[in-house]
Length: 366
Image (cartoon, rainbow, N blue to C red; front, top):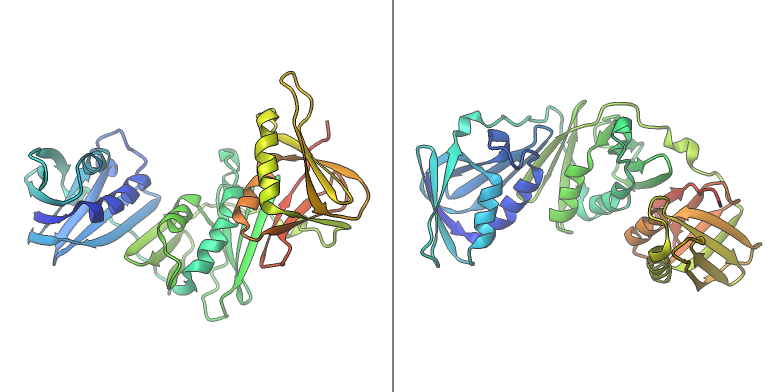
């Protein structure tokens, strides 16, 4: 195999491929990236046996062929050399990498492409969703998944079809993020799928805002296609919690506040918060929200910001990250916080109501 290509074109894709690989420090076919040069196209594949990644980039092929190369060192080499054309020449179990603008030559050992795992192929039709809307769905939910591996069924984002809507939900048991988008009724009813964040984060990082994203869901695997990328991932097994039970039907009080002012106050007050509990207090009274930390050996912090509220004075204790992360995901200038009492769930939404909301369970006040 022999081909030439521009460093910048290859670096972008090898960076993504290396993000997929789990066995980054052990030399095996699973720590290698598959490359195949044919018809002036380079196919690139990477896998951790659960998430699979494939893309194609334009190259000038002098001799077709395929091999696998150690991903970590391959990426390090690409990062170390200046912009310009590279030449790759693979013979037997070695691949020679020569940049045009430097006299250095790198030689990497390779593993035969035949040892690289085959990727699954979807057995059900794909359906299309506007890529911008799908990215918005992921952004509003993926941060709320649980990192508790003993509750693996909450380690992913629930994806389901509900009549003519596509729904995404994530929860860690103390908070919940929900969003739905209309997609019509002409997609296959795939039931419920718990999607690992890894594949969804690739979509966030790499998909543009124009065009469509194609999705197919089988019993055990999700397939996603956009641009030149083909992704697939094994789904989490297990029963996702009945999230509808925790969505409040009505809430007695509502306040509105500037989202960026609240984020800034949280950032400053959290400097004095005990990081194990991450507990901050929101004290509200007509016209004012106080964001403050509890007294500690280190000290305390309090910041007042204006809000629109005409109810009774109340204080609510919350994990500050559970307020901060939804506020970062929401793009609107003003947000609304709805609640009934100190110990019941609060709901965070944009003032101009949309198709998503965030629910947070309060903490004990002391």
